[in-house]
Length: 160
Length: 311
Image 1 (tube, rainbow over the protein chains, first blue to last red):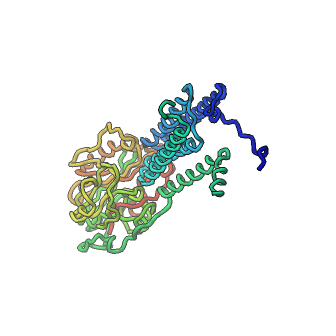
Image 2 (image 1 turned 90 degrees about the vertical axis):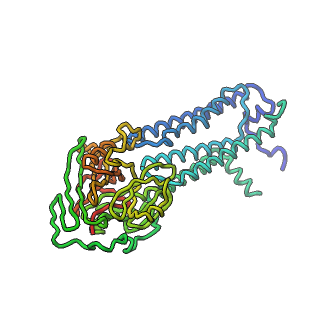
Image 3 (image 1 turned 135 degrees about the horizontal axis):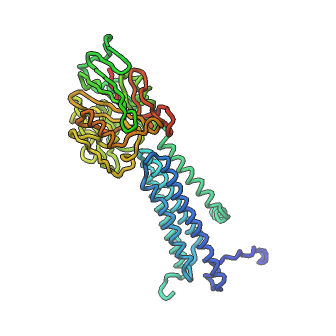
């Protein structure tokens, strides 16, 4: 394949920041984390509003799982990405780890939602176990994936 | 390797991963909710012998000379008197029952089947078993754990997960007891003479005293709702109570108020059964309360099981 037939690489601010890195390009990373933070703020608000509306129609019943559902996007998304957006030199996050992390949080939120609906109805179910296990697997793989990626880049090694 | 590369390339497209994952997660949620709320799973069928609970010394059919009115029933073995009282802006239906043998206090399963989401209306189950008086039971089919003992047969022997709720046990001689599933196995209960077990709760009256707190910080306890309860006054003398609720005519009872009603009837032991839209009282072929379904629509809800008086 002739060299000039290759597609030009799309600009990736995280790659740019990693590889050497002018200051104004690194700002794009801050913007990305800020947008992610806003998205998680929206999910957190959505969880709170959903729970409040659901309880209006639940005849006095409530579920701790549904009430605490908002803590997952708050602690798992809003807080860490807020810290990244606020830090001076935020490390890059790989797309794979980012997708897996989001998936883990989504499964955990779904688990709380399903458990809450079942509890408020006065029923019990064993299915919520699967949600906790699967979300734990997603989050663990995302974490390992990102740590490995950082180690490859040299982040976290002594003197780096 | 080529295939893996193609899959990797596919997921690199904007939103491809989110769409695929979102679809899978939504499908999983839908399946879990349908399996929990809708899809029936039959695990066992009730045989004729099981339905009789092994009582042999009692009459098996209603005598011809029974006296029946709109609010009472009387024959040589069963006397039932129903009164309606107004309590806390709520219609409360109280059935006072005296029987000559505990064999006439029975339970029945929807469609004579044990399983999850196997349901029938209280009136349909009662009619199928020629019940004179019936109320909804504990809706065992809503749960995946918890002892289920009906008419002397153990249908489920796994205790309720992470719960210290009490169960009501009815012994062969007709006496009531309150047990905790974490302290005794279903087989031990059966061996000790338990014929029926009702697992909903909580216990409303124990040793003649109200057992629930007025300030109990439990949503279910605090809210006014339709309620169903069963209690024992004396040897073979029972009270079955159903209250309306969630309507403009009746706001419903809290558990504490229900406990007070049971105590006022003279119950030594009383127990809360499945309430809300399930609360139904059936007498002589008719539903006599105003059961609500899906909010305040007057309609009878299908349930897993009933408690009834009959032959």
